[in-house]
Amino acid sequence: MKKFIIVVLVVFLVLGLLACAAPGEKIMEKMFEEAAEDENVDVDMDGDGGSISIQGEDGDVEFQGSGDGMPWPSDLPDFVAEPQGVTVTSKMKVDTGGWVMFEDCDQNEKEAYVSYMKGLGWEQTIEMEQSDGYQLMVTDQATGRMLQFAWYDDGTGQLTYGEEE
Image (cartoon, rainbow, N blue to C red; front, side, top):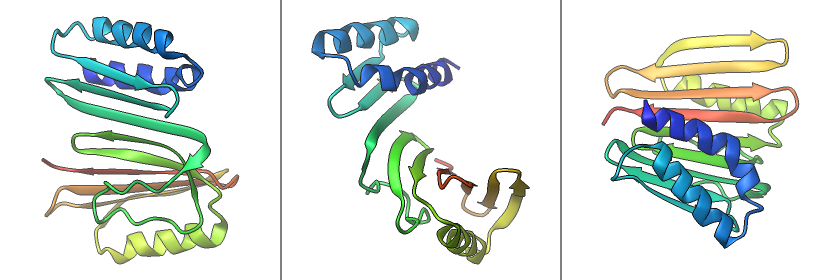
């Protein structure tokens, strides 16, 4: 539960931290470490690079974001394919999964990614048209893998992935 609280704090505060200078980063690092109530938690922030990493007994959390876009993450599992033409705006990684948020995803790429996911042959656990977008989640019970694609009419979206340890 502590890990979840820290992740939520990280996501909501990271944009404000991007503007912080080094002294502000150290203050925020200490605040997160104290909030965790765990002597074995280490928080590192890089305001210039837009990143936060948290290491603790329960696992590690890494977050990175950029309003200017950033490269597609190279450390994703092989089943998380890159949607073509998107601009990555943020990513988060935990021990068994994470997410990548993006923009500039047009209707054609959305359809291509949905086709890719359905072609994996995994069980479709969620497929939903929404008033402003679409969601698809597929799972592979044999390997414990999960992939979710959320796409919105404004071209933004998110890929969420996970796999058992």
